[in-house]
Length: 140
Ligand code: FE
Image 1 (cartoon, rainbow, N blue to C red):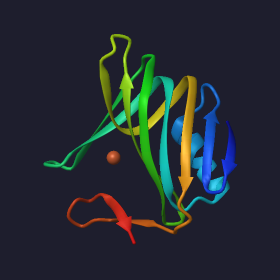
Image 2 (image 1 turned 90 degrees about the vertical axis):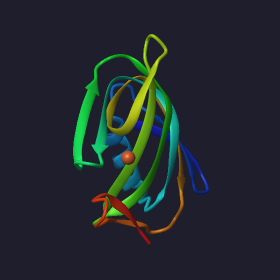
Image 3 (image 1 turned 180 degrees about the horizontal axis):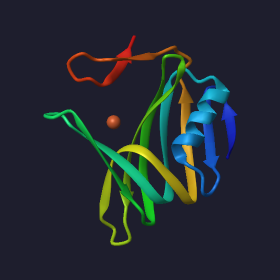
Image 4 (image 1 turned 60 degrees about the horizontal axis):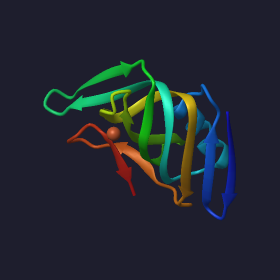
């Protein structure tokens, strides 16, 4: 599902073709016991699903784009919620006409390559629902 190199608390990660980015990242963080950290990277995918939260209605709207896109930027963080890996990942994706779409990444499937850079902060950082926003905020 992935290959990686590691020095100190930093990982360079190459995900296999055709895998789900979120599934592979979750597995990697669980296997390495990463409790918190940062994610950056780039890649290419042929399907991606984004989630948009309308703050006025608190309704989530998910939308899938089935097309070849470059992930020009992957940025995210790693924490834990109820003991399990909790990822928060945003991406920008460029289309064949070079326009960009993006947002909160629910998942995407690699078609090409995906190269990620992960820093393990070595801190236990959890998540809990914020009463005002309903979002899972950091819990320090
Ligand atoms: Fe988000």
